[in-house]
Image (cartoon, rainbow, N blue to C red; front, side, top):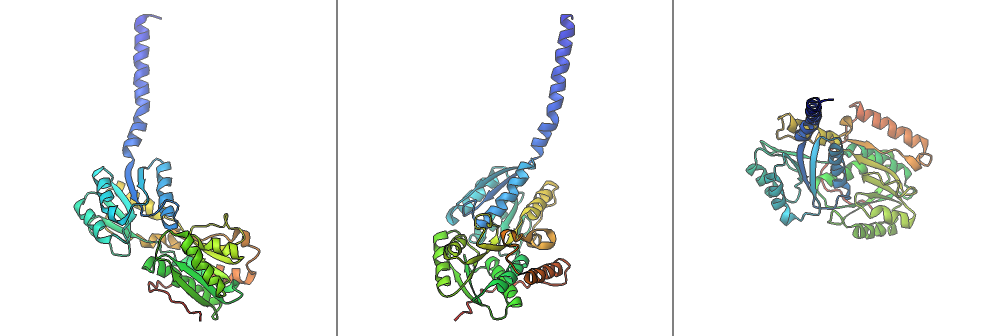
Length: 333
């Protein structure tokens, strides 16, 4: 083969190789730049669900994802501004304790989209809110707990008495009362989002007062239940694999519907200030009752049937779980 023919073939090969790279480059350029800011570790229940959904979008190649954990309230605004000036198109976080600061940052960066966990309302044009509206499966887990307790005493340990916690506890209590009007509750808030030892001690005190089922809104409660030979109800995530003889059921939060919608609207240039809370509800597959798993044969069949019937009514729109954001109170004497 002549030197000229070889040169032509080499040139063609270069062109073909470059052409093959174009789709990959275009795909990379199309990825949305997303950042998240969390005040607690990635493994904390609430944050873990948001982080999981964003990591899934990253794995699909839809976004470039950066995240900061354990950001103190005093540093939250600074980190938000750093991400906003760093070219991120969507910033996700939790503004519960820093509402004023977070909303100010959003005003200063009108071209950046913000999706923040919040008890407040959306703020035009670019500050959307979400929350874990999983009161429906929480109600179902309450039914299970009400039917499983032998002492008619249930202990409940929460982080802070804010709407997102209160509504889940209230729904759980209402579900328990549906199947067992005699049930009584001991309610404690540890005033921390992540303090397993403190939650554990609070749960021990409840067991000492006769509680045989514990509602684990915080990490540490299931450990106490396991050590004392009692049962626990999970919240937000399913930890039954770690506590196979302790965690009966859990109300699961799936953030994928919320995160995927936000990514899509930002990419399409249609993001606006709105409440994403409803996308955490069962009809959008944003929440669900975890499989009974190791307790499938331990929960009475008639109780399972009642729970399944109630779940069917919820999904069909025939039964609405009341959203009660008021602080739950102890009823046990």
